[in-house]
Amino acid sequence: DARVTQTPRHKVTEMGQEVTMRCQPILGHNTVFWYRQTMMQGLELLAYFRNRAPLDDSGMPKDRFSAEMPDATLATLKIQPSEPRDSAVYFCASGIVETQYFGPGTRLLVL
Amino acid sequence: ELKVEQNPLFLSMQEGKNYTIYCNYSTTSDRLYWYRQDPGKSLESLFVLLSNGAVKQEGRLMASLDTKARLSTLHITAAVHDLSATYFCAVLKNFGNEKLTFGTGTRLTIIP
Image (tube, rainbow over the protein chains, first blue to last red):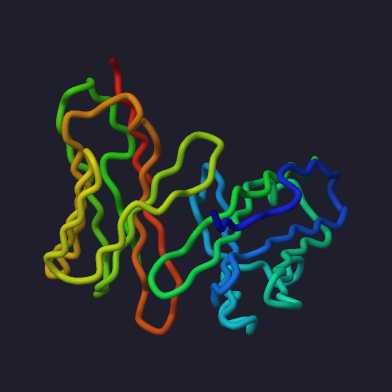
């Protein structure tokens, strides 16, 4: 049963620290997405890749967030430095053709 | 800018009843998705609606798409407790660009 995996599942950190979230997309999927979910803003698309190339990161605060896909089996989302307003659940999704499949999420709390 | 609105935001209904969740979107699109999210969990894909008039059914859930009205509905028939979750619709902005814009979600609670 192919699934998107994300690590860590939970992260508590202090303001100013670097946070790195990792995602392993489903093998064979050619698109990868990073979303952020909060109560106030709902689900927001941060960035997405097709065939490992970044296509759109307009939803991402550029000064502190970065997203990369060093190879087809790994996508990363980094926050440096982290701030309390970054506290959220970050989902990775991978897709092919019409449908996106979501990972379990990383629940981030920045104190 | 594409806007996707769902209503109601909250829905509490009794088991056995029927109800409909509505999803309106602001610009032309021919692809609409429905997802389910259980509390503290990830999003699960329910339906992909690809064309005007598309109707898909799975168990007690049926989704339809009217692209002319820019409206999709998710109909629940004879609700059961297991259907309690938050339901999201999402719209593909345009072909060749796989960005989805999500609605606000409808939190559905089924009361015994």
